[in-house]
Every structure is written in C-alpha cells, then in structure tokens.
Length: 200
Image (cartoon, rainbow, N blue to C red; front, side, top):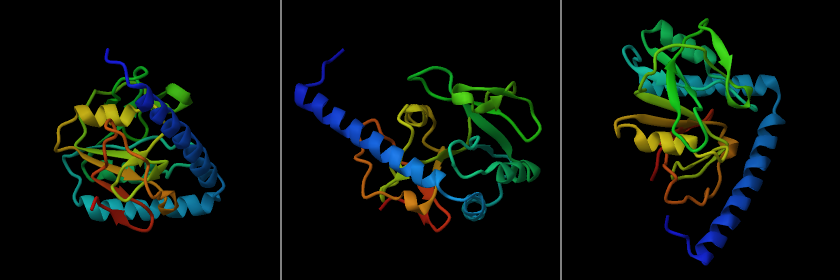
C-alpha cells in the first residue's frame, strides 16, 4: 500500500479533526430543536421529495431509520409503498464496506443493527433506484458531511451512475464547504425543508 506523504497525512488529520468538531456542533444544534419543529421540517422535506420524484410506482427507494434528530421520513416511505414503490432500508454489514439494502415496508419485522438502529430482520437484498441519505452538514456543491464512517461514499461508488442519490436535512446544516476529499461523492441534490439544492 502506498504511504501518504507526511504533509498529506498531517493535512488529513487536521481536516478530520475539523470535521469531527463541525459534526458535533451540527448534531447538537439539531438535537436542540423541539419535536414539533422537527416534525414540520420532515413534512416539508417529504413534500419536496414528492415534487422532485413524481410517480414512484415501480421504483426501488431506500431511505433510513431516523437517528439523532434526523428528519423522520417513515410516513413518507409508507406513502411511497402505498403508491406502488418498493421501499428499502440500508444495513451496515461491516466497517469500511458498502451498505446493503434490504426491502422493507411498514409492519415488516425489524432487528437491532449498528448503533442500535433498527434494520430489516429479513427481506430481499435490492438495488435501489433512489437512495435517500441523511446529512449532518452539506455545502453548495452538494457534498455531504455524514457521521464519518464513509458508508454512503463507498456505497454510491459501487452503484450504477443512474442511481439518484439525494441528501436530506435541515437548511441550517448548510456549510461554506465540507472540505471534500477525493473519496467524497456529491449528492445529485440536497433537499431541505426550505429548498432543493443542485450542484452549480
């Protein structure tokens, strides 16, 4: 394995420390919101997603189980299922590996996954047409700051280019830059309660 030059290693250490601090700040701000405000934001995001995606029938849509104040899109996911979409949730298989997607709809059994986040207890492994990824922060180029595990970047790198990757979160999570690295993959768009952002 090629060793990073010392200056590059030091630069990456500094960026990682900066991202860790920004991540903590943004999550704390999100958790400080009241339940009613978070619910209103989630409804607004769901409306914007509906307008963006149109008829979901026949498409495989993966979202997520909400964690640490993320927008709760489970009612929206249930609505997609009722309109003919096949819905799914991601599963962490192991560190430093892509996510696995399993078919899931409201009422299907769940198990406890990594960080005790519920994941489908069974269900077919599917390849989503649309991946909804929660964001901690984002910038104007639609780069997403996540939790630091790199799961979504590794996953998106292996999916077909036709896959529509959408980041969702609050508009207040906007940042001047996430200081993207070569392994960071931008979202096709970011949907917040206030707007739909696409890369310049």
